[in-house]
Length: 442
Image (cartoon, rainbow, N blue to C red; front, side, top):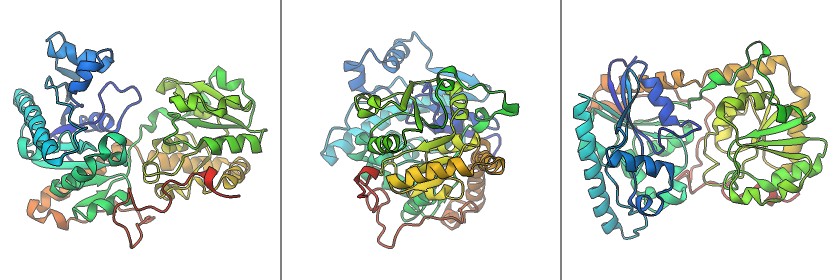
């Protein structure tokens, strides 16, 4: 067990992010045994100049002006650092030479300030844990000289609009030079291992502690309790990038006896879609995270109606663990990653299968199945996740840097979903990409 060490965690999201993030959860868990410095994304020049109304911009402006502290103590071992360095907004630059030149300048300026706080906190022999940030922090291994540099791959971030321009080049380079790659799926581990043999699947963490119902004391919220059973529910961000609107319409029209409940904020396209016109579809709006277990408790079946694309096909949907932790039967879109859950989740490939499997989930549910789902979710706690990362670090330190590529992984799941023989890049060579349920012929 790793204990008494220093970790610097690089996060693509700010600490204050209301829904919680992987980096934040890892930082809290690591800080139970180690000292941790959490670093969120610095302020970008474009935001500083043109988006002063945003809360994060206002916060950084106060820090830069000396009106707010740059270092905040979260607990005995955990501090959050807000860099005063304003990074030049260069992502729009397509010329690689110019981008690389300016990128190095940004990284040098940021690293200089990080060295200052590292010295101030008396951090030594620290380990950098980089959560999917392939651009900011790319040169930290060279400029900060950590004991180890760990890169986490947990999502198809490289395919997002912002990162797709330069991330496709920089992520493989970052994988290659990192000392250890950890991923939340065998799919990403296979991808990274083609570049860096010291790449391992350690699974995913989830705060399942709030997703439980001891002695059935958790109340079902009043706005959900008014809706008749059977309730088919979804909790999460309602966005057309990830969810299949046509599939939801089909389910609602095919089975008007089912009440579809959607809990969460909507993007603009979702707010204007036809779903709002269907009487057995209910939008309950955004809720505080502490309220979500009560809503899931009130579902008869939980769903994850994803549209299959380059992002969703290999993504680990944390809501699956949340649903299972409440013991709920789950019907989800069959994706490359979701094969991992095939023994516990009903997986649908077509809209017809979705309707049939919802009916099956309603009929087959039992106390025994509920317990099995809960037991699986408990295996995905942040404590167990951190223990797996610690084990990989211990193996790496024990073997020495010169032998790191020979370290075996004790956490590879036997239920693997390997790429095909023509595999080149898991984010661009998948037969399901771009296919939605609404496009499948009846």
